[in-house]
Length: 191
Image (tube, rainbow, N blue to C red; front, side, top):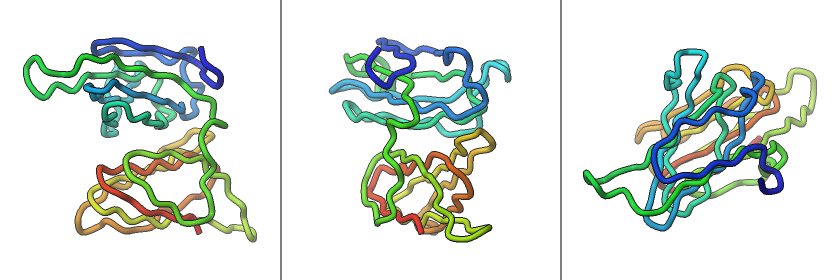
């Protein structure tokens, strides 16, 4: 295992993977990537619910891009599927997945962020007064989604955008993970 990794897997074909020791009711940070010609889909699942896919969309990795995501507290396993664009064409490279320690994620900065693809940040609130709740303002060039997973477990908040709702605000009440994901570019700022 590499430094900062709590579990590692790799393979060529589709596979269901159980998180070692479950996830203790907290979100699980995960890094996944494919090869030069292969893309993969990651779907959080729960064996407690009969290995059903959770009601969250799968995350897609694009070729060599390292995708850092957070599996919700309800997920104690995940499934990796190779994306096949034709009956037999799905690329020739393998996938790699590893569970990360929470401190490997960058902290959500106070300045404006710009990016594309999928990025995950760890959010630590700095309350200015009692009852203060920070928010994340976001804007996407295309479709995208914003997800907030409380660090101590609990229900994740997910906002899927459309052409009509490409900008908005997400409340950040507690410590947790913020994931911004889009095929196009995005901008965000925590205020």
